[in-house]
Length: 440
Image (cartoon, rainbow, N blue to C red; front, side):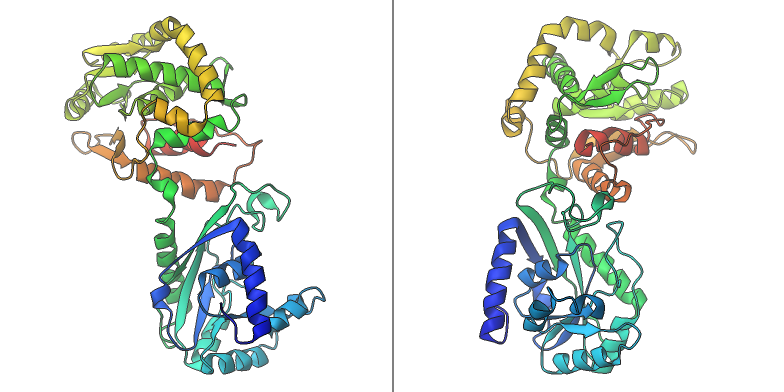
């Protein structure tokens, strides 16, 4: 248990013990911590960052705290107990002196170099205060990254602190410790770059990045099965999450039964039908191939041959608009197939809502992990030669979805305009898989 005095150790025991009931903290790179004193420089995501960092760190940390907060009556006794160092931004010399003294005694001192809590969930511009401390103490600087805390009730996710429900319980967090940087090399640019590298290492620890996209979509759709997910701009019709589940699962079973090949092409504009088709192919544990129907017949034929496509999903009205399209041997026309599956759609709609996610995924025989296996196949435009196949793995799409979730910070009242077709990388990732997986 970290702490020099019995009182400090007792406080850490109870405070960190309570925090561990809510948070599951994973530490990586602990071996990078020097045995002596050093300066820790973490990103600042939430009000509970200091507690999470202390849980991850095997030694007591002396935090540098803004004098404004240090002086608050409710906080001061606790901050004194853990030997926090108050800093006046206009007169920082005393704080630098005290921090230097602690480092020389072999202690870990921590300063949040951004100087404020993140309002976006991303790393902001670093301030120069840590450089002054490191050079004054001639101490190594250890970049520290706290991951997955954006979205906790202590973060500004959703445009507010505290007034929101936690998304998970217990809440998982990862703390990564980077390779120490000497005081002379610890510039703002170098530390910022190292923080991003440690952040990437932490990001790779997220277990959801390795899950099968079909499982992720099932979980996302089951959160609010009666809420509208898709509104078709052509006719204004709407599709709820639960109905999308029923349609997609019924179609996926049909595809599994009748088409043994691994890849199935989808030739549809951005629409309800395209959403159903893409999800159905994924739930069948097959690979949706987005074909650019605006390309030349030669380019499309090349893509079909390269991907070894034998089956394409489309609709009769859309087929009629593409007289020169080189269709493969088999066509699954949604307007003809789905009416024949009405009873199965109703059954899977009810089963999808009632059945727990892990049982439903097992029922559909979906693999638990997708990792770096092929999930989607797209093709380049072919403007400089024949179209080239671009394989996107489950990990690729899940990673992009996770990053976009942080950057967009959409709320339950927000909507996305899916103007790009799903054979486009942005359309596929942001306007298709993002709403399926993370839509609120």
